[in-house]
Length: 244
Ligand code: ADP
Ligand code: MG
Image 1 (cartoon, protein in one colour):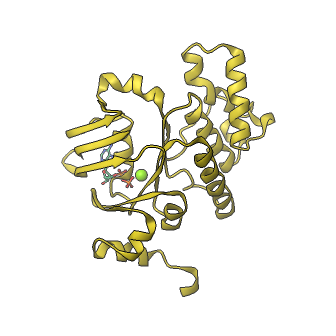
Image 2: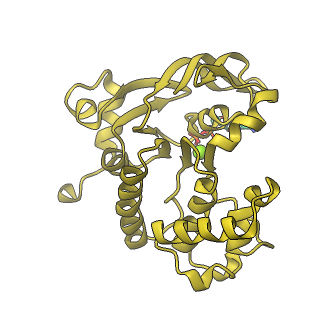
């Protein structure tokens, strides 16, 4: 489904992603995890074609993502950016439907799809007319998710979707998202820096450090068969409650 081959990326001489290979399994949830600045967001932006690699290729269904193919492919890739990225001057409904309206969907189809998504994400219908500033953090994240799902993409990318939420809302949304992923059966790549979240949501965890992939494996394997010392250090740094 999604394949990165020898992909690397630097910004003004600063290496964000070292040459790496990564295959994202179809219909499963892959979680990118690692410390701040290790290249997670850069990798996600490469996957959606927002930036181009310095070397190597990103293949989507075997087709290289280039500047020219990215626009077309992006309709099949839903992307939730790190801060939600909603337009403040558009209502929730207008944010969600922006791309579909641009593609000329008729009003009835827009309405049906939004209603369907609001049900899926448990978003109150009477708040679809609200602007982002009038919504809670959890509601804004649901709007971002609906916007990403609007065109029914085959691939869904989410960059730290819970980072700005308080713990209770975060807990609730994690559970809902896991259920949504299960229902939709989509290929999902999610970025987080929270190991518990990675284990809870991911079929596969990709642990990154300083622009490279340290280990790609199911959560259990990371715990039981760490590929190198950094894996163990990273796991231990996420202090379990009973050790406090
Ligand atoms: P993460 O999402 O894991 O926190 P990022 O992918 O955002 O990490 O960043 C990886 C590295 O690349 C960091 O050192 C960051 O400062 C740098 N970087 C990312 N985007 C840019 C950019 N547009 N311009 C300059 N440096 C960048
Ligand atoms: Mg980031």
